[in-house]
Length: 366
Ligand SMILES: NC(=O)c1ccc[n+]([C@@H]2O[C@H](COP(=O)([O-])OP(=O)(O)OC[C@H]3O[C@@H](n4cnc5c(N)ncnc54)[C@H](O)[C@@H]3O)[C@@H](O)[C@H]2O)c1
Ligand SMILES: [Zn+2]
Image 1 (cartoon, protein in one colour):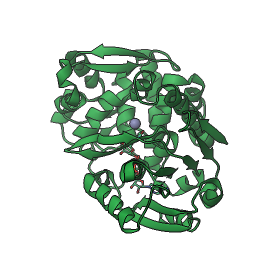
Image 2 (cartoon, rainbow, N blue to C red):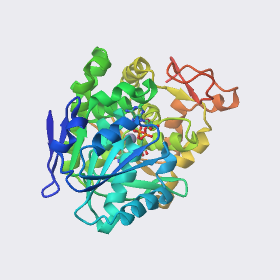
Image 3 (cartoon, rainbow, N blue to C red):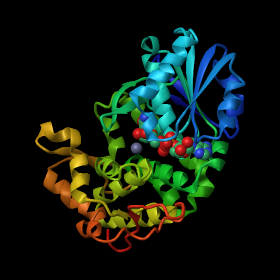
Image 4 (cartoon, rainbow, N blue to C red):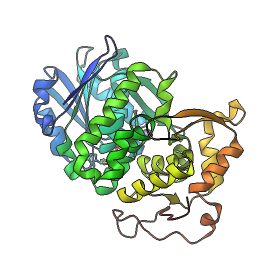
C-alpha cells in the first residue's frame, strides 16, 4: 500500500509493506552518504539491513529512551555528519521509534539548513503517527519537543514485520494514537477497535491512521488550525507524562488523556477499548502536578488551554478551558485520593515484574 502525502513540492510517499526495509535501496535514494540513526533498544539488524543498501552508510546508535532527544545527542549526530564531510546532497535515515525519528529528523533539518530525511519507523507509535507530518524536535530544560523544526521526510517506509520484536506494552501504547485518530476523524477506524481483535487488523489500523494523519497534515502542515485536532488526549496526556517522570509511555498518557475529553457514554466505550488493549484507565499521580504540567506553557494565556473534545467518534470540537475546568477533568483519571494510598497494584499484564508503576485500571471509576 502506498499513501501519498500531498504537500506541493514537499510531497512524499508512505509505503506500507511487510519486509519493505529490505527494499529500502529500491524505494529510496540511498546512493550517497547516509547517516543511519538508530537506538540501542532497536534490534541492530534493522539498521544494518538499511545500511547494507546505502552507497556510503554511517550508522550511529544512540542510547534508547527519551533522554536521547537532547541537544547533546543532536550535536553528536551533527558532528558525525561533519566528520564524514556530509554535503547538502547527502541524507539521514531514521530506523527506530518516535525518539529516533524526532531526533534524526531534527538533525537533518539543521545540518546545512536542511538535508534529505527518510523515516523507517519500527514502533507502532511511529508507524501510525510520528513518522508522518514533519514534526521534528528535541527536549530542553525538562520541556518536551520545545526545540525543533518542521522538516518533511522525503519518504517513509513502514515495515510491519519489525513490530514482531516490539514488546507488547509498546504495541498497546502505540495503538492509543490510532484509537485517537479513529475518535477524531474516522468512526470506521474506531469500530475496528470496538468490534474485533485489533491485532488481527494491524495493517488496516496502521494504514487508516496514516491516511487520516496525512489528510490532516496536507490540509494544515504547520498546525495553524485543523492539525490541532491531533492534540486530542494530549493536553491532559502531556501533564500526566511530565508528572510520571518517564514511568509511562507517551501512548499510555494519551490513552488516559482522551478519557476526560469524552462525554460519559463515549467514555464508557473508550474505557472498554483501552482495557481490551491492556492500556491504563487511571493512574496514581499528584493531580496538581499533572495540572501544572498540562498548563506549563499556557500561563501567559491566563491559565486557559484550548482542549480538543470528541462527542461522537469521527469528529471533534475545540473548547477553551480554565484551569478549574481542566482540574475537574483530570480528576476523572487522576483522582486525588489515589496519590495518598500505597502504590497501586500492578495490573498491566505486559509490564515487567516488580517495576514500580503509577498505572492502574479503574473499572467503574471513569
Ligand atoms: N513527531 C511527531 O509528530 C510525534 C508524534 C507522537 C510522538 N512523538 C514522539 O515519539 C516519541 C515516542 O516514540 P515511541 O513510542 O516510538 O518510543 P521510542 O522511540 O522510545 O521506542 C520505544 C522503545 O522501543 C524500542 N524499539 C523500537 N523499535 C523496536 C522494535 N522493532 N523492536 C523492539 N524494540 C524496539 C526502542 O529502542 C525504545 O526502547 C516521543 O518522544 C514523542 O514525543 C512524535
Ligand atoms: Zn502523541
